Length: 217
Image (cartoon, rainbow, N blue to C red; front, side):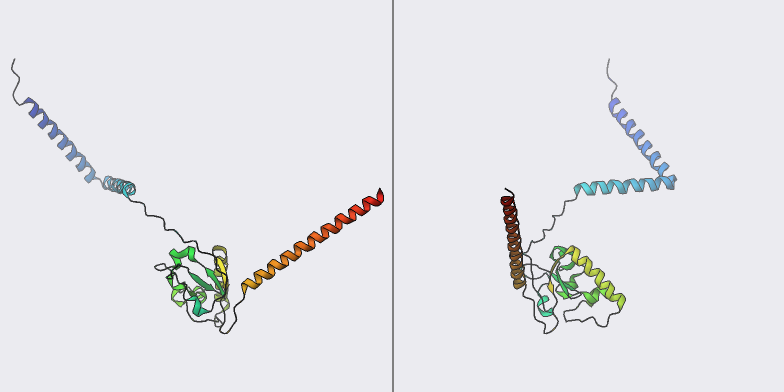
């Protein structure tokens, strides 16, 4: 019995027509209802976000340089060198007469950061006025600020104390810097003397106990 000519092709064509009709009716049904359109839009956005998150290359985490701790006082003219653009990238900021090392917060205070203007400057007035451009590279005695503004500075200073390392004082014009190495030597000497006095006291106590024990024997 001979096979009918063109039967497979006709079946395939009929199947394509059925699929096309189903797709057309499906789209027509969606278009008819605004709710369905909204749902399709939400689904499309979710699918896009999922695909994008899987294909996105992870940005490398920026490493923060670990610099040796700095301990010294600064005149405002010297402070300006530490704005994050130097060879070591160190960033110092003065707040209410104190200098803090904010290098670990380089994404905020370093070049290109939102508070770049604070780097290497006295940020006290800027923090009091909530105006970034009020940071200054000149000595500012803050004497014209009112109580509310000074309280604001002190609150900011507490945050700097908690987050960053204290370096030293911001010197007034003509003020001599503190010799911190001498302070450390004095502290070490006092610690040594205290330990020596404690040892002497312990020896005297031991000697007294020994004497009393001998008498009782």
